[in-house]
Length: 231
Image (tube, rainbow, N blue to C red; front, side, top):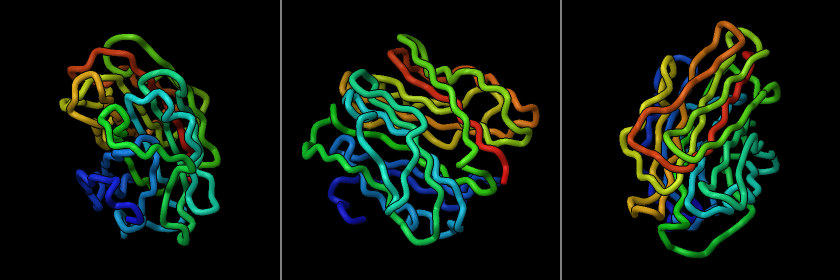
């Protein structure tokens, strides 16, 4: 990593969970929305056209205001929040086989738990980022509840994304019928943290209402449901 002093690499599963999920990892960035992560080194099995999905969560309210790029390629921010907590962003990027880093164009040069950002990344194969559709939602209590989504192609990849404020949720479970990619708490400091979470399923019906993530959290949250058609 170019700036490895900013990172704590927490876990990596280069083999993924089977099926279209070919890799999963979680990281913590200790300088807020500043991100410069070499995903190709984390996922040596990556192939051209694979879609990288990221969910970031921070107690800092300005996470959603950052711009994210992968080399000259835009890492599409499909939904984000700025100016409110939890700070969150949901990203997509398709690997071109050349540009190995995903990074933000903003920097917060601090090392404080309230600026820590937890990230969950999943690498998926066989789906079209360009055809993504998304819906977002928010709430003031309970766990993140990604909204219903319909009108997409059968056999699409459906992603349930969530971010919860202040709570260090270590017992996250996916919505019913979904598989958990992972979850990551930004900091274990109560009141100065946030938790990111990501789950997936293949939808044969063209419509999904994921329902809530499970876990012991109960605070302000933001969520999104993404659908990516098969290639």
